[in-house]
Image 1 (cartoon, helix red, strand yellow):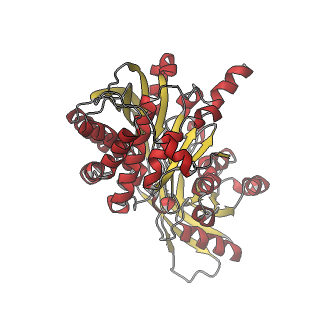
Image 2 (cartoon, rainbow, N blue to C red; image 1 turned 45 degrees about the horizontal axis):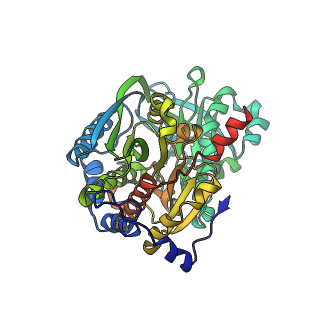
Image 3 (cartoon, rainbow, N blue to C red; image 1 turned 90 degrees about the vertical axis):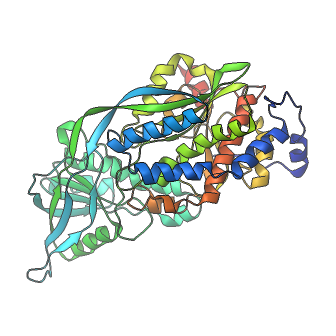
Length: 481
């Protein structure tokens, strides 16, 4: 992981020198960058749109009425801002949650007549039990190696992956790494258990809050082995693990989700046209869909409305960038990625016209700067942008070959430089994919900061004289083929 040092004060001062173009296109004049930043910081537009999207529309899982309503609401609002709006058609998965309940019906030391309720929620893509449910022994594993070592015990049983989320790591700025370590078991665990003949698979909730709430998310089951799969709360996973040390544990499990035919949906695309380089594009974005347990305020309505604020800010200032700034509200990031894949397929031949792509999909914690998927040479060109973000406490910068934002993978593979805010995400996974991801969890001041970082970055990238170049991963791929 490479890091660039923050500019010294002398370098900052040097970066604040520039030339001014005409009033409508002031370019990267430091005063213009400051105006974009400060206008977004003083605006409640994004917070108001967040309230509309979460409170009026609600959950927005792909294929649902909520997802369709969100497309209409966001597209209509962007038209009101004067943007050129296009709805890009997509076929999306349509998975519907059904009944979900479980109880421990036998274990060593169980008093006569006692059962214990287990709080869980189906994972996206889960198969179904019969309507009356199933009753089966539970085995608890903590690694993939342990699962393989106990292969003879798996057939016909319910496998529980009791793997903790490392909140200690998250508290020290490594929430994404902590999530990646634990979520591997949600993604691949049920599929591996299914291939070994398991009757069902359970995963300890991937998150940091132990408030007995489940964390849903997608799993990677295949159609020919689509067993019931669910996330169990942290507390209930720990309970089952403790009881398993005493002796055999038996669970009655009922999950009745359905996989319906793919549904029609859309990416919402809104252009703020450029002037002399209008055919070149800078994307700012968030994903419009959410899981169905709550209203997806942090994941990812906050990202969508921050992108909308970019156009609102430029409209207020009557600023027209050299390159076109394109807002994209991606559809189906959560359980398929069809929005990003479709956009890339349609625009494959125009990849070199995409100068940069920015996605905000890491929650609404305070942003301290930028994370960029660009080459070393390109990173050196961003010093004036760092200088503009420095006064708001967002001058930190981290460079990697790729950012890995959910909807930008295909664009990254085509060499498009990618960006995301560098965020305090220490508590993000307390709410992520849970019934608690609601409007009240978003701090309005932090949301203004997200919008300001995104708007300032977009304006800077859209007005650069010298291109930042293609990403390292693309360059390396081209030279090794």
